[in-house]
Length: 67
Image (cartoon, rainbow, N blue to C red; front, side):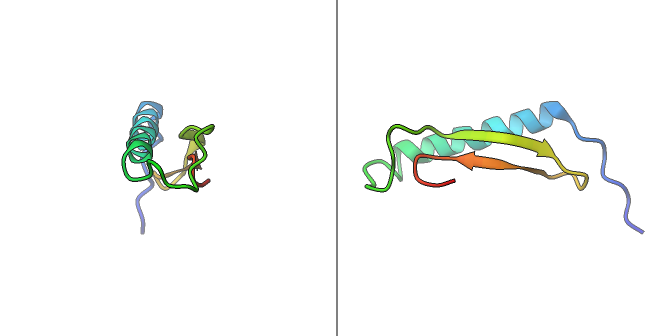
């Protein structure tokens, strides 16, 4: 029998989303800098992240080079 996941921690989710955005902002100015597919008018943004029952989360990460 599987144990139930602990209830979602909004503060933990906020820290994870902030870390995700920070990492991809770093990638944007290092590894992706100057890559023609990068749209300089867009910014990295994590959108709509919500906790899942299994302890994970789901949302969309928008970057200047993919969604």
